[in-house]
Amino acid sequence: MKLDILVLAAHPDDAELGCGGTIAKHVAMGKKVGIADLTRGELGTRGTVETRREEAAKSAEVLGVAVRTNLNLKDGFFQNDIESQLEVVKVVRKYKPQIVLANAIRDRHIDHGKGASLAFDACFLSGLAKIETVDEDGKKQDPWRPISVYHYIQSDFIEPHFIVDVSSHWETKMNAIRCFKSQFFDPSSKEPETYISKPGFLKMVESRGIELGHSIGGTYGEGFTVRRYPGVNNLFDLL
Ligand SMILES: [Zn+2]
Image (cartoon, rainbow, N blue to C red; front, side, top):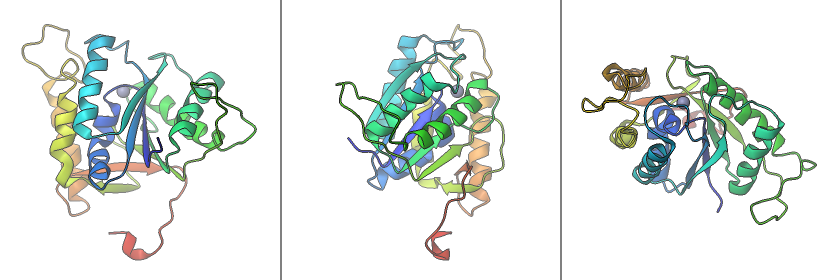
Protein backbone atom coordinates (compact mmCIF):
# COMPACT_ATOMS: atom_id res chain seq x y z
CA MET A 1 0.00 0.00 0.00
CA LYS A 2 1.27 3.45 -0.91
CA LEU A 3 0.64 6.31 1.53
CA ASP A 4 0.43 10.04 0.82
CA ILE A 5 1.51 10.93 4.36
CA LEU A 6 3.40 8.82 6.90
CA VAL A 7 3.46 10.03 10.50
CA LEU A 8 6.45 8.86 12.56
CA ALA A 9 5.95 9.12 16.31
CA ALA A 10 8.25 8.10 19.18
CA HIS A 11 5.29 6.96 21.31
CA PRO A 12 1.69 5.93 20.68
CA ASP A 13 -0.23 9.23 21.31
CA ASP A 14 2.50 11.59 19.98
CA ALA A 15 0.87 11.65 16.55
CA GLU A 16 -2.53 12.54 18.03
CA LEU A 17 -1.16 15.26 20.32
CA GLY A 18 1.10 16.83 17.71
CA CYS A 19 -0.84 16.52 14.48
CA GLY A 20 -4.13 14.63 15.01
CA GLY A 21 -6.13 17.44 13.39
CA THR A 22 -3.84 17.54 10.36
CA ILE A 23 -4.15 13.77 9.99
CA ALA A 24 -7.96 13.92 10.19
CA LYS A 25 -8.07 16.82 7.73
CA HIS A 26 -6.00 15.03 5.09
CA VAL A 27 -7.93 11.80 5.54
CA ALA A 28 -11.12 13.81 4.93
CA MET A 29 -9.50 15.18 1.74
CA GLY A 30 -9.14 11.59 0.52
CA LYS A 31 -5.42 11.29 1.22
CA LYS A 32 -4.00 8.02 2.49
CA VAL A 33 -2.36 8.60 5.85
CA GLY A 34 -0.57 6.08 8.06
CA ILE A 35 1.17 6.14 11.43
CA ALA A 36 4.34 4.28 12.41
CA ASP A 37 4.96 4.46 16.16
CA LEU A 38 8.66 3.96 16.88
CA THR A 39 8.17 2.35 20.32
CA ARG A 40 5.35 0.71 22.25
CA GLY A 41 5.62 3.31 25.02
CA GLU A 42 6.61 0.52 27.41
CA LEU A 43 8.25 2.91 29.90
CA GLY A 44 5.07 4.96 30.40
CA THR A 45 4.18 5.24 34.09
CA ARG A 46 0.49 4.55 33.46
CA GLY A 47 -1.04 1.76 31.40
CA THR A 48 0.66 -1.30 29.92
CA VAL A 49 1.99 -2.19 26.49
CA GLU A 50 -1.25 -4.07 25.87
CA THR A 51 -3.59 -1.21 26.94
CA ARG A 52 -1.55 1.27 24.90
CA ARG A 53 -1.72 -1.01 21.85
CA GLU A 54 -5.51 -1.21 22.15
CA GLU A 55 -5.81 2.55 22.70
CA ALA A 56 -3.62 3.26 19.67
CA ALA A 57 -5.76 0.97 17.50
CA LYS A 58 -8.97 2.70 18.63
CA SER A 59 -7.51 6.12 17.97
CA ALA A 60 -6.35 5.03 14.50
CA GLU A 61 -9.98 4.18 13.74
CA VAL A 62 -11.17 7.58 14.98
CA LEU A 63 -8.60 9.36 12.79
CA GLY A 64 -9.39 7.14 9.81
CA VAL A 65 -5.78 6.25 9.04
CA ALA A 66 -5.13 3.50 6.50
CA VAL A 67 -2.49 1.76 8.61
CA ARG A 68 -0.86 1.97 12.03
CA THR A 69 2.28 -0.01 12.67
CA ASN A 70 4.93 -0.18 15.39
CA LEU A 71 8.69 -0.44 14.86
CA ASN A 72 9.30 -1.86 18.36
CA LEU A 73 12.34 0.29 19.09
CA LYS A 74 13.30 0.67 22.77
CA ASP A 75 11.25 3.33 24.58
CA GLY A 76 13.57 5.84 26.25
CA PHE A 77 16.73 4.25 24.87
CA PHE A 78 16.50 4.12 21.09
CA GLN A 79 19.17 6.12 19.33
CA ASN A 80 19.53 7.75 15.94
CA ASP A 81 21.94 4.96 14.97
CA ILE A 82 22.29 2.59 12.03
CA GLU A 83 20.01 -0.04 13.59
CA SER A 84 17.11 2.38 14.14
CA GLN A 85 17.74 4.19 10.84
CA LEU A 86 17.41 0.96 8.86
CA GLU A 87 14.10 0.16 10.58
CA VAL A 88 12.74 3.59 9.62
CA VAL A 89 14.16 3.29 6.09
CA LYS A 90 12.27 0.00 5.70
CA VAL A 91 8.94 1.53 6.71
CA VAL A 92 9.48 4.60 4.48
CA ARG A 93 10.35 2.39 1.49
CA LYS A 94 7.36 0.17 2.21
CA TYR A 95 4.77 2.97 2.22
CA LYS A 96 6.45 5.47 -0.14
CA PRO A 97 4.93 8.64 1.35
CA GLN A 98 5.40 12.06 -0.32
CA ILE A 99 5.23 13.74 3.09
CA VAL A 100 6.55 12.54 6.44
CA LEU A 101 5.38 14.14 9.67
CA ALA A 102 7.84 13.62 12.52
CA ASN A 103 8.32 14.46 16.20
CA ALA A 104 9.15 17.92 17.53
CA ILE A 105 12.80 18.87 17.03
CA ARG A 106 13.14 19.37 20.81
CA ASP A 107 10.74 18.67 23.62
CA ARG A 108 10.33 17.76 27.27
CA HIS A 109 10.53 14.02 26.53
CA ILE A 110 14.02 13.08 25.35
CA ASP A 111 12.67 10.62 22.78
CA HIS A 112 10.94 13.37 20.80
CA GLY A 113 14.09 15.19 19.72
CA LYS A 114 15.77 11.84 19.01
CA GLY A 115 12.72 10.74 17.00
CA ALA A 116 12.91 13.96 14.99
CA SER A 117 16.57 13.46 14.04
CA LEU A 118 16.04 9.78 13.36
CA ALA A 119 13.11 10.49 11.02
CA PHE A 120 14.95 13.26 9.16
CA ASP A 121 18.13 11.23 8.66
CA ALA A 122 16.32 8.01 7.74
CA CYS A 123 14.19 9.82 5.12
CA PHE A 124 17.42 11.02 3.47
CA LEU A 125 19.11 7.61 3.71
CA SER A 126 16.01 5.92 2.31
CA GLY A 127 16.72 7.61 -1.03
CA LEU A 128 20.22 6.14 -1.36
CA ALA A 129 20.09 3.16 -3.72
CA LYS A 130 23.22 1.53 -2.32
CA ILE A 131 21.59 1.05 1.07
CA GLU A 132 19.93 -2.30 0.57
CA THR A 133 16.91 -3.37 2.60
CA VAL A 134 14.34 -6.13 2.27
CA ASP A 135 10.66 -6.23 3.20
CA GLU A 136 8.94 -8.79 5.48
CA ASP A 137 8.88 -11.31 2.61
CA GLY A 138 12.58 -10.94 1.90
CA LYS A 139 11.96 -8.93 -1.28
CA LYS A 140 14.48 -6.19 -2.07
CA GLN A 141 13.04 -2.71 -1.49
CA ASP A 142 13.40 0.17 -3.93
CA PRO A 143 14.93 3.45 -2.71
CA TRP A 144 12.38 6.15 -1.82
CA ARG A 145 12.86 9.67 -0.53
CA PRO A 146 9.84 11.67 0.69
CA ILE A 147 9.60 15.17 -0.75
CA SER A 148 9.19 16.80 2.67
CA VAL A 149 9.67 16.12 6.37
CA TYR A 150 7.68 18.39 8.68
CA HIS A 151 8.08 18.35 12.46
CA TYR A 152 4.93 18.74 14.54
CA ILE A 153 5.01 20.69 17.80
CA GLN A 154 4.00 18.80 20.92
CA SER A 155 4.64 19.75 24.60
CA ASP A 156 7.18 22.57 24.60
CA PHE A 157 6.25 25.63 22.60
CA ILE A 158 8.33 26.03 19.46
CA GLU A 159 7.70 28.88 17.08
CA PRO A 160 6.09 27.27 14.03
CA HIS A 161 7.27 27.81 10.46
CA PHE A 162 3.76 27.15 9.20
CA ILE A 163 0.35 26.38 10.69
CA VAL A 164 -2.34 24.06 9.36
CA ASP A 165 -5.93 25.21 9.93
CA VAL A 166 -7.59 22.25 11.66
CA SER A 167 -10.70 24.09 12.90
CA SER A 168 -13.10 21.57 11.33
CA HIS A 169 -11.20 18.57 12.66
CA TRP A 170 -10.43 19.60 16.23
CA GLU A 171 -13.15 17.42 17.73
CA THR A 172 -11.78 14.38 15.90
CA LYS A 173 -8.30 15.13 17.26
CA MET A 174 -9.60 15.39 20.83
CA ASN A 175 -11.68 12.21 20.42
CA ALA A 176 -8.56 10.42 19.22
CA ILE A 177 -6.56 11.71 22.20
CA ARG A 178 -9.32 10.57 24.58
CA CYS A 179 -8.89 7.00 23.25
CA PHE A 180 -5.68 6.91 25.33
CA LYS A 181 -7.67 6.56 28.55
CA SER A 182 -4.72 5.22 30.55
CA GLN A 183 -2.57 8.24 29.77
CA PHE A 184 -4.70 11.33 30.33
CA PHE A 185 -6.84 12.75 33.12
CA ASP A 186 -9.32 10.25 34.51
CA PRO A 187 -10.72 11.06 37.97
CA SER A 188 -11.49 7.36 38.59
CA SER A 189 -7.95 6.15 37.81
CA LYS A 190 -5.89 4.75 40.71
CA GLU A 191 -2.63 5.03 38.77
CA PRO A 192 0.07 7.56 39.73
CA GLU A 193 -0.33 11.08 38.40
CA THR A 194 2.01 12.02 35.56
CA TYR A 195 2.89 15.16 33.62
CA ILE A 196 0.30 14.33 30.97
CA SER A 197 -2.43 12.91 33.27
CA LYS A 198 -2.91 16.20 35.14
CA PRO A 199 -6.16 17.92 34.07
CA GLY A 200 -4.17 20.97 32.96
CA PHE A 201 -2.36 19.05 30.23
CA LEU A 202 -5.35 18.70 27.92
CA LYS A 203 -6.21 22.36 28.63
CA MET A 204 -2.74 23.20 27.33
CA VAL A 205 -3.38 21.16 24.16
CA GLU A 206 -6.67 23.03 23.66
CA SER A 207 -5.20 26.47 24.32
CA ARG A 208 -2.20 25.77 22.06
CA GLY A 209 -4.61 24.84 19.27
CA ILE A 210 -6.67 28.00 19.83
CA GLU A 211 -3.60 30.23 19.88
CA LEU A 212 -2.15 28.75 16.70
CA GLY A 213 -5.54 28.79 14.98
CA HIS A 214 -6.15 32.39 15.99
CA SER A 215 -2.87 33.51 14.48
CA ILE A 216 -3.97 32.34 11.01
CA GLY A 217 -7.56 33.55 11.29
CA GLY A 218 -9.03 30.15 12.14
CA THR A 219 -10.40 28.57 15.31
CA TYR A 220 -7.82 25.81 15.80
CA GLY A 221 -4.39 25.24 14.30
CA GLU A 222 -1.44 22.86 14.47
CA GLY A 223 2.10 24.16 14.01
CA PHE A 224 5.04 22.60 12.21
CA THR A 225 8.70 23.36 11.69
CA VAL A 226 10.93 22.48 8.74
CA ARG A 227 14.64 21.87 8.29
CA ARG A 228 14.51 22.42 4.53
CA TYR A 229 12.41 25.24 3.10
CA PRO A 230 9.28 24.02 1.34
CA GLY A 231 8.48 25.69 -1.99
CA VAL A 232 5.10 26.90 -3.23
CA ASN A 233 3.90 27.02 -6.82
CA ASN A 234 2.40 30.46 -6.42
CA LEU A 235 1.54 32.98 -3.72
CA PHE A 236 -2.10 31.88 -3.61
CA ASP A 237 -1.02 28.53 -2.15
CA LEU A 238 -0.18 30.52 0.98
CA LEU A 239 -3.36 31.56 2.68
ZN1 LIG B 1 5.94 10.97 23.40
